[in-house]
Image 1: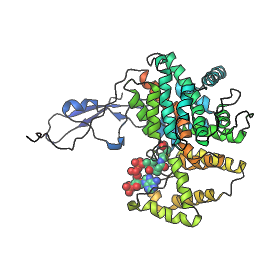
Image 2 (image 1 turned 90 degrees about the vertical axis):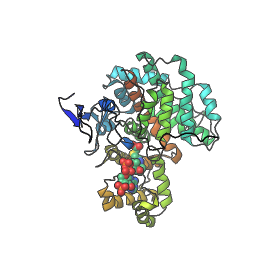
Image 3 (image 1 turned 135 degrees about the vertical axis):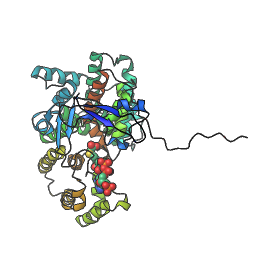
Image 4 (image 1 turned 45 degrees about the vertical axis):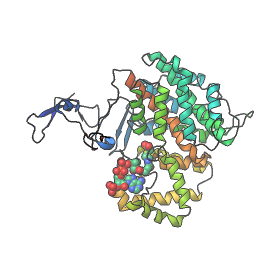
Length: 426
Ligand code: CMC
C-alpha cells in the first residue's frame, strides 16, 4: 500500500470517490477500485487492457523493456542455465531448489508419470483425425475423474501431490495423443531419461525399441518447455484462476485453460504460423502476405507477430531464435525453403513502418513453430507442447490463489440490451 490515493470525480455527483493506490515490488502501482461499486458504478475495461485481476508473486513482465522474470529470475538466464523441472520447482515454491530438493522433485515427477488405464481408453476412443488439443483437453479433464476423491484443495500436501501428477503426466498424455493419431502403440515413460528426453522417446520411440534421443534436440525441447512455463495473467492462466475460483477440481480448471490456449490469438498461434508459412509457399509471395496483413479489410494477421504486453521485443523470442538456429544447424536444415520464407517475412515486417509503428515484433510462437517443425513434430501438436510446458504456470497460479483467502471471480457488465418490458398479452 502507498499513502497515495486516486480521486475520482464524476459529473453530477457531489461525493469524490477515493481509491487507495497499492504499490507493486516492481512495475506500475495499481488503483484499488473495489470501493466504487457502493457509489453505483462499475469499472469498464473490455479485454482487461487496464485491469490487474489479482495479486501475484510468481511472474513479472515489463512489456516496454522486454523483461520477463520468474520469481525474480530473468527468463534469458533460466533458459540457458536452468532446466524445465528446476523452473517448475521455482515457479511452484518461489525459490530455486537445492541439489537434494531438485533430486527429490525430479524423482516425484517421474514416480507420477504413468497414466491410468481409463485415460488411455478415453484417448483411444477419439477419432484418429481429432484435433490433438481436443483430445488433450478431455484427457486432462478426465484426470479429475481419476483423482477427484484424493484432492483436498485446502491441504498443501494434497496440492503438492496433484502438482506432481499433473507435471508428471502431461508429457505422457501429450505423447499418447500423438501416438493415437499416428495409429501407433503407446510408449510407457522411461524413468532413466530426462523430462524432455522422455517426452521425445514416448513421442517418436517405437514399442520394444531402446530410447534413441538426440541430446541437442532434447535440450531444445527442454528450452521450449522452459520458455513456455509461465507468462503472468495471460488468457489461459486467467481462465484457470477464474475457473478455479469456484472451488472446482484443479484438473477441471486446467482443462479450461487448455481450451483457452487453443485459440489462434494465444497458444494456437504457433500452429497458425506454420500454416501461414506453408500457405505463402514461395519467397515471391512474402510481400503480398505482408500487404494482406496490413489491409484491415482482409481480416488476416501475420501470425507469430505482436503481443498484448510486449511492445519492444519478446524476450522469449530472442532465446527461441538462438535455439532455432542451433536446432536447424544440428539437423542440417539451414537451407529449408520454409526457413527462408520465415526469415524474409521477419526481415520485411521488422523494416515495415506499419509493423514498426504498431510495435509488432516476432513473438515466441514465431520461432517455436519453426523449431518444432524441424524436430518433426506435426503442426497440430504444437499447441499441445505449449500446454505441456504451461501446465506448471497454470498450476502455480491456481495454487497461489487457493493458498490464501480468495473470492469467486464474478465480473459485471455494462448492459446495453432492452430496458424492462412486459411480455405481450395473449
Ligand atoms: N498482424 C497485423 N496487424 C496486427 C497484428 C498482426 N499479427 N497484431 C496486431 N495488429 C494490429 C491490429 O490490427 C491493430 O491495428 P489498429 O490499431 O490499426 O486497429 C493493432 O495492431 C493492435 O492490435 P490489437 O489486436 O488491438 O492488439 P492486442 O494486444 O489486442 O493483440 C495479439 C495482441 C497477440 C492477439 C495480436 O498481436 C495478434 O493477433 N497477433 C497474431 C497472433 C499471435 O501471434 N499470437 C501469439 C501471441 S504470443 C503467445 C502467447 O502468449 O499466447
